[in-house]
Amino acid sequence: MTTINTAAERDGLAPEGLRSLRIAGPLTAATAPDLRRRLREETVDGEGRVVLDLEAVTGLDASGVAVLLEAARVRNARGGRSLAVRLNPVVIRALKHTGTLTAFNICIG
Image (tube, rainbow, N blue to C red; front, side):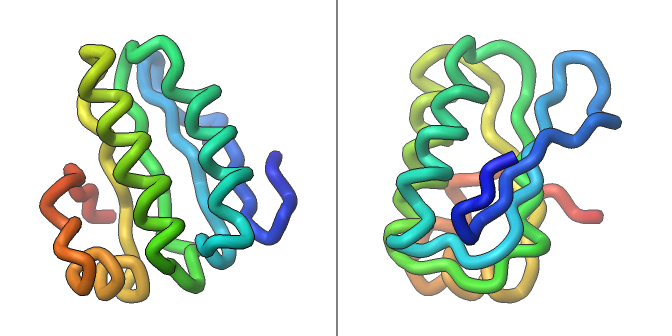
């Protein structure tokens, strides 16, 4: 579990081939490098599907958006299935504001 302001933990209930990471707290310039490292570890093989649960994210700035976009690009470049995200209103607002909402597959619920 990553503990530098932003917590990223694997969902132990994820089905085979599905990696789920729950991100909690602010996703900002202060926490983005740690999340970038964690996402690189999780997406290295390009296999299966990765779901980022961002429902507990309390803030998202340009650095956080950049990390999410990088993870999606890496997955696509390596032939993996697209990165999917679960969102909350804070995250939706930030992604709409930056024009990047359509870069992700959105999971509801």
